[in-house]
Image (tube, rainbow, N blue to C red; front, side, top):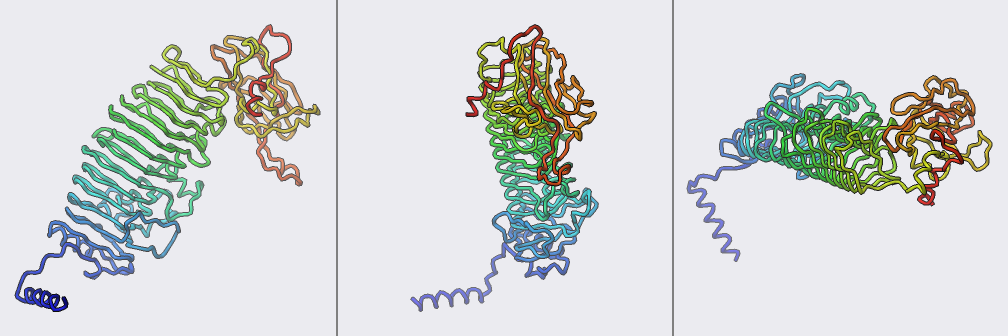
Length: 597
């Protein structure tokens, strides 16, 4: 066996020595051509030479070994060429200001202050690919607010079947930009772009975006840090203009003004499938400016409002949106949201099926989980937590609404101004009253068992020690707190409140509102008081009261207190008595006592 191997080896050497032309190499390593991997010298020309050599051969791989490569210029990847680093999974960096990053790192310098300049990397031909790299901008600093503009880190225009794979573009102004391209694939791209993560326009033949993750890499995140705050109010993670049959799967973003933006360019708008998408800590998790008639199909989405915000929305469909369909299925909404969904377009159809709404009305203003001002909606098989009082608002601009089979602990409440343009049925209802006429005279004993189904934005139940009535309870309000009460339509009621205003909480801002109108001023109220006002109900079967109060902290008034809650006023009882009603009021807490036991 050994002699046979030696004979074959000798034959091979003789053939080579005999003048056979060597086969061309279809890969090259940048360090072989003199690129320094310690970041000390500009390697632009070396990289471009290697890329051009592979392009002349019709394609190949330019390999970038581990190290830091200083690129002061820009790079163009020819057709069929891959610029490839060490990573085969998306690299990340959790640590700010790291002098060295592992793996293949390109240090980008070109284009500072010139967003319309040459992109850092241009996919300049069909089948060009960038793979397995970290791209970092050393001159970018979180101290610059607003961030200094740069051209896109990776860009493709008028090309087909290109790819961006397994890359972390840590701190670009804009990470990935595609225009007039087709069938590109963007997979496993991570980073913290400060203005926009991904933009696609004029893609007329299906592109794919998979497993991309835009998150605060390279910084210590703080929602009130000026740099993070600017991004959280102004930047867009994913933006889709005209793109046909767009496929987006398992993508995520955190800390952006808009998570997923569907815009309209001169070329048109988007349609496509969006599966397993997520947006956390965003002012608008999804913003629809426009869409194609075939619609946006959003499945298994998870949407959370911006931390410490008071006006975030999970999904907003703007009046400019056209006559397509936004279809939501099996999505979840939670966190600091004002509204989970806000539908404002008169021509867009909204379908919401099998979704979970856990938190909304974070500021206790009476905002609904879903607000539909105009257009059409089908709302079926959804679930609401007990963390809000108003579930669905249907405005008088709604042309058609079908609302069926939804569940909400304590009953589903719909504010319906669309009237006979709606079909509402088979939704979870509140517990039935022994007699409907009991609603002529009701009392809510605040702080007693069963009260929480009528309240939002109140502190926990406590003993009503200020009143000196054994066994009675109370709750402290916040700066804004809500009460929802069942009523009979078209009745005149006397509303009576039994409350306590500490001397230090006395304020002209203390008041009670009904549908935005101040019905009781508490500006001059101090101590334990009963206050009353006449109200009229229209054709609704419930009312929503808002209490506003000056906030104060017990520990700031009492050096021995550790209570740092923000308190307002205390309420013990709320009574609604219709004109002409007599007898003892019905305690509506009793409707839910069996639930809490």
